Length: 264
Image (cartoon, rainbow, N blue to C red; front, side, top):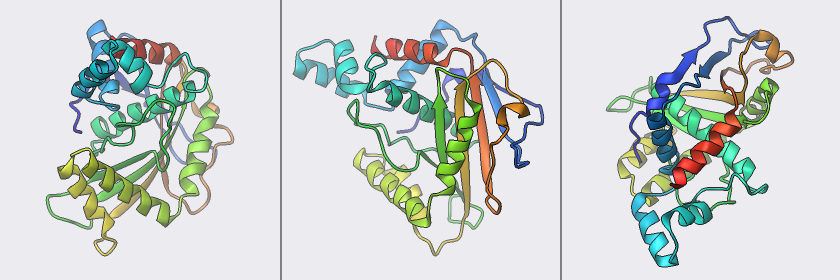
């Protein structure tokens, strides 16, 4: 699947303050303004839905189950914002989708979208959260593969959860990165995205040099952000990890609204 740039990306605002972790590394911070239009919210909702299934599958699934398309989406496609066992999935998936969009449309990587597609509600995906890449037409040592672990805190302001994302990417071993690439390659082929699968396969060849980047991200509900929010958050000595934070007020209410719009 290849997504067009959603309109809500224009509402990302970079925090130009010098924000650092306790260990001294810089944190790149963006906020999302809360003045989105109805059109932008509706498009964002459909953008989220497209990570899970296609419109053709929704039509066919609703017909086969003799229910409305809305009920099919609510029961068989999206995790539920009202089911306590699935709200964690809503939060995590929302965070990953936002960061996929950020990495692709702000940082200008290519981001294969495959993890959520076809997964039934309540069946969380495993493995590294996001795999992204930059490459030339032919393999080049300057090609980049990026691995990101993302955490989401939509109902509370918890900037310290960035440490959880850092810990997750720090503990990943070479075999975890290889497994993530192999999984992306196989699932992209399975859902018919052969072109993207071919590009990912370039990074499966360990004999072709490239740059490998580790990243940790957090999306959290907040009205502001500064260095004091990251007291105690550290990157271990010897590790190089890019860290990103995105915040906006009332994120859980935003996610619930988007989920509702996606079902209509």
